[in-house]
View 1 (cartoon, rainbow over the protein chains, first blue to last red):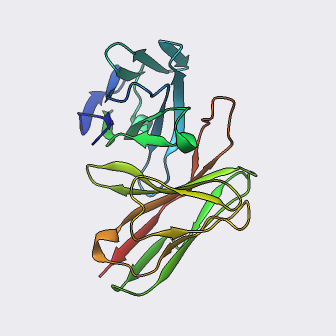
View 2: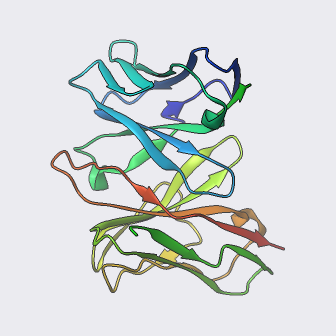
Length: 114
Length: 115
């Protein structure tokens, strides 16, 4: 039962354009969401997060949008740069759940072409 | 430098030969966990620990053991590895924030192959 789904295994965009990565979840208890970026041969690194009390959080070129009614979140990268090429994981947590552990999506490989 | 370290980074072993993957963090984090990454499945949690001597099962604990005798270390033990445990393993740690969730710091990963 995949509670967090990233339906696009890969995404390719041109440098300077917008990248939009999508994530859907099914567990209505999730109240905190994070995005991680992963380069080959490295561990995932935290990128940006959002609490369920917000619908948008921005950090430089990265913005995360949360639509609770649709159980959907997205990560926007503007403008995209070649160094953004990586696998992006969406993750969710229910603070009230045991251990407050993260449930990850399958990941989306983003390729930004020069 | 704040970091999570794992050893070994690469390991090839045979079915049934016990192995331990070590994990250590220098950030004084209470929470530590182990994940495995498999194609098309993302990262799935194996075990986690809220603090010293407190461990619990994640989503895929079968075939694994852990211990948390010290705050900084959280080894992953495979008593009798099988080929279906061939995977990329990540250790992670974080503080426990007010919401109960905080940014996790991941180690560089351990690529395990069980023949």
